[in-house]
Length: 475
Ligand code: SAM
Ligand code: SF4
Image (cartoon, rainbow, N blue to C red; front, side, top):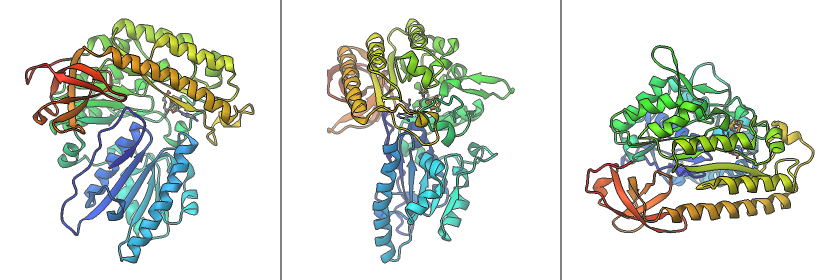
């Protein structure tokens, strides 16, 4: 399965296709966030049950699924150029008597529905993110022809119907796994399309989430990222019908056999509860890493964004997290050029970045999304100003990232190596702080917690040497 998404990077999951030449093949490509990576895996699980093995070559695929992202205009426009290329492949395959079913899933599917088929006739099925459990019936209808669209907000919960991944699929996806605990969002930030494409905020029952983690761990997964559009608002019911928050969910997950490291993403500053902050001090499996988007350092802009917190609230949340876990690595998201953003507003963002010191962060130019309140605002910022501010912000964030990485040289910590590196004998894993780490390690140690010492810094990764005897643990 291919994935085009922003870091934190997903493992490169690939279900080994059955070698049988008659087996149907699927090509699944994921754009955008971690939720899409996870959803793509679940769609692959559904199609796997239907007899499709996976291929990384679209030319070989009887079923092509593009799992799309609508968060910014460029992300959704990319889909149409991708579809144009796939149409040519579909036509070439048809000339050889081979049919291809082309599916557009994800948030562009939800937002644009049948318009996608009108713009690109090669598309057979458009399915929104809440309806993947209906794929078998939808694929059958799509194969019958005519173009099928399912962007309903269903009454049933897709998670009650999605099949479990096969043991082979789980093993092929490696030791790092995403598990969705929460979906949708009720915050309605004025720039954001998510509440319209993913629906209102829902939490999966705690037992379901924990069962999924248990099953993945049984098959060899070791590092888990609990994901949701607003994951720290998680409030799933446990078996006694009592709502469990994210801190408790993480505590229960940490007790499951095989779980070595936990992360969660993405969080909203308003939902950084005391018990979640305490978890960073008390939960030994919880990585010292927090992705906490703020978007802007200007209170005026935060208000216009309907974020419902100030820059001071954010800084106070950071202080509390740092008091609980002093070595925590912080990450964030920023939007530059939100309508009405002045140079003074932008400088407030730069000041906030200076004050916090981020280990990594993502910065985006504001992109007007049709249907969101901010898209209607009149004082849109000129493209050139957005580009200039983005460059300044990214320059500052990159300097902080490099400084953070350089400061880890000489430090020791545990890494769960998960796949071979580019050089012979090397493995790649993630540091507790989400940095990519390369070291010469016996491949038998994939999936173990291996203590390393950081020996060097490359532009996008760290190099390390192993310091622990096999089997020794580290946090
Ligand atoms: N729930 C998270 C939060 O509270 O910030 C964010 C999830 S959103 C899927 C990921 C990021 O995309 C946001 O943090 C924001 O920086 C960016 N984003 C969302 N809408 C955007 C827009 N219209 N233009 C530019 N960036 C946008
Ligand atoms: Fe979008 Fe995040 Fe705001 Fe929800 S909290 S509307 S997902 S930016």
